[in-house]
Image (cartoon, rainbow, N blue to C red; front, side, top):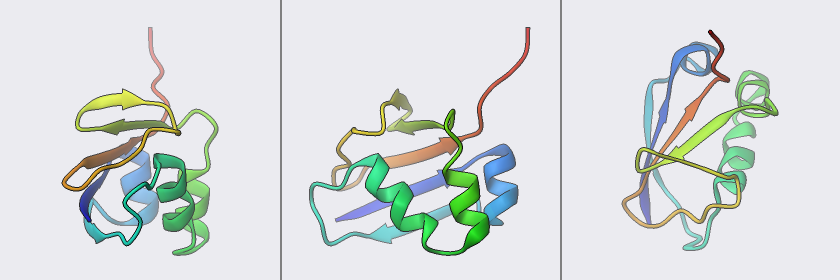
Length: 84
C-alpha cells in the first residue's frame, strides 16, 4: 500500500523533511507502528516522533495511535499545540 506522510512545524524541522511517500508491505499498519518504523531512521526521527503529546492525523482527522492506516491515506504529525 502507498501512503503519504506529512510533518509540520518543529517535527518537520527536526526530521528535515516536509513530506514522504511510502510503500508499506503490511496492510494493517497502525499510526503507532508507522511512528516506530520512521523512528528507525535515526535519533532525530525517533526523538521527534516519540513525544508523548504528539498529534497525529489521518486524512486530516486527529486520531489515536491505534488508528489503522489504509492504502492511499495521508498521515500527518504535529507537535503539541499551546496557546491561550
